Image (cartoon, rainbow, N blue to C red; front, side, top):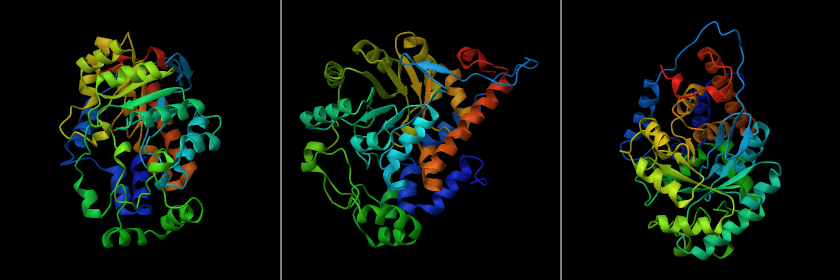
Length: 381
């Protein structure tokens, strides 16, 4: 795939391969999609300082967070339905993460279960993103499954109290669970390669794709109309729930979706090991602040107490570096691996992340840095 040279190329390839409804589900935002454009503009405003004649042409990108060392500061973010983008997509992403030496965060709403992902990627460092279900006992059972499969870190999504408004899904006839409509079925039939390599492959093996982490009694195929009340996402989640999870979970806990100093301080006080300063990629709250605009204040407030990570809007290696320069220890990337999966399966996901890492390295060298650990806020021009 030598013709795929940047994120836009991969995105265009994904758009050609995926049904329109599925592509826009992973690609677009919410309401007027102001947050997505705000995130882009906020990243573009930041410039990095350049230091010349440093005497070196390489940079050591080794870093550490959560008391572990990694060859680079990336994490593959949790994304729902990656297994629809490519057959067995979550296991493919886990193997890609293993090859790159970085963590892969499995979504609660993945098509492949944590058990099968572990079987398909035995050496991967797996994290689990948690949407707390209304039935707490079922939630605790999911945590037990995660423990059995060697999950080191729990990432609790805290910024989704409601289903966001995404009109384009209705225009496309796309919904989760998927409800067949003339428009939706027509859309799928226009992508025969995807239909044969993904959907029909599931139908011939494991059956209609579903949310694999739902308990067997509540497992819902994506064509069914309703999700049982017990496994609906808890829309009244509170800090007391986080405290209870802290008591039950022996590993690290990360709170994802923090955009204020107040919430970051609460996370630190309640015993979280880290936070993700995140606008959910612009997919939830359309008038939320861009992460880079609030990240410095959050770092100043709690950066010495907990691990601070960031995400949203990363398209180039320079975008990831800007989050790092503002104080983030690591950067989660979500849409890019999905574009890679759609464009070229497992190798495509690997290639797009390797491209991102290479861009980070070259920009670090241009900035005059030879060590990622000393790269920081003084890098901002």
